[in-house]
Image 1 (tube, rainbow, N blue to C red):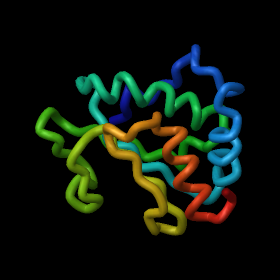
Image 2 (cartoon, one colour; image 1 turned 90 degrees about the vertical axis):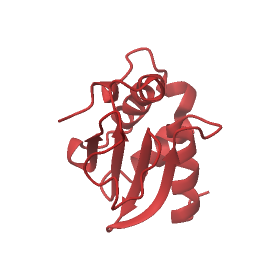
Image 3 (cartoon, one colour; image 1 turned 45 degrees about the vertical axis):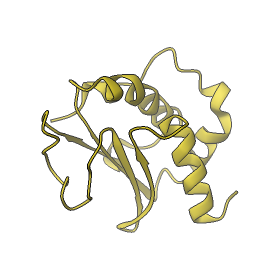
Image 4 (cartoon, rainbow, N blue to C red; image 1 turned 60 degrees about the vertical axis):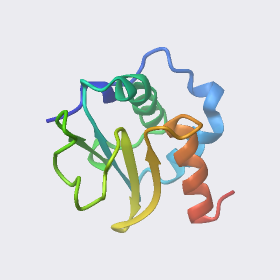
Length: 125
């Protein structure tokens, strides 16, 4: 099951977030994004459409984006394995190893937070 909330926001302005898009684009063939959320969740509805738009602008292939829908008790695929407690949670992996994580209430949107964390992890800052 995919998440409707990951459908890209058509009004999201990639040009205003060029640095984040560039970082996400640089890793589009080697990074995998695991996204936990629920279409019923207000935080997911607020944050994930812009993140979906950022991934689209960066040209991240669909096979590099793994959507994990959870129920209202936050149960679903990979929740225990990845220690997901809040949603949305986004885990970025390279070669099966976690290099960045966004959890629900970071002070900046997911694309910005993860681009900074990925840049730090791969040394492109």
